[in-house]
Image (cartoon, rainbow, N blue to C red; front, side, top):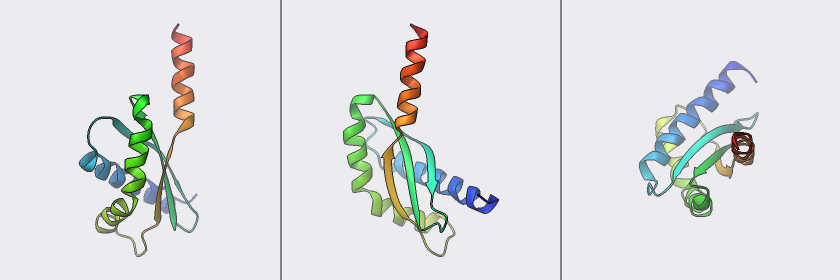
Length: 106
């Protein structure tokens, strides 16, 4: 990836995080752990972790319902000609890393 692509992904992550922090119900902590931006920058997928773990379903449901509002937020806060399609997925890698870490502590 070129530098511009990386910077764009970082900017999208920062602004999506702002949106989530502003509009979430605060019953769970939602963190964007990574961003997958397509080569043509027409699709962005935010990988998220949710704490506590039993709130993953409702948190992901919230994020999926708010995709278009998040995209509108990005449109007004990121200087881009065309805002990418927004998607959210649970970061299974982060979940697995946390499980391994807790097993190692035992």
